[in-house]
Each structure stands twice: as structure tokens, then as C-alpha cells.
Image (cartoon, rainbow, N blue to C red):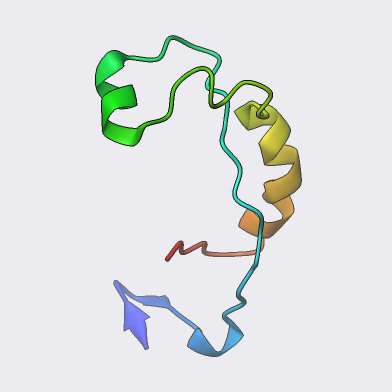
Length: 69
């Protein structure tokens, strides 16, 4: 199977059961985004920033194509 001439090997798919984590964006929370998601500065207090979370997920992401479902 291919898509745009890139081979896709469906037999090597791996499911990861990785804990969900909020990410502290370290920036202002826009009111619209808080209304849309229900996530505000208080909810991400103590959550890792992206650089901290990346250290944990980089090995998974760099193994190949990542598809979130």
C-alpha cells in the first residue's frame, strides 16, 4: 500500500498506552481558548512544559510515523 509514493507498512503498527498529560504552554491563556477547551492556567499548574514532556515522548515519536487516534 502506498500514499504519494511513500510505502506504508501497516503490519508494524504499535499501540502505545501512554499517560495523557496536560502541557503548560508558559504563556497567556486566551479567554476564547479557555472557553473552547475548558483548560485554564489553574488546570495546567504543575504540568510539564513541552520541553520536559518531549524528553519522555521523543523516543516514541522518532521511531517512525506517528498517528494519533
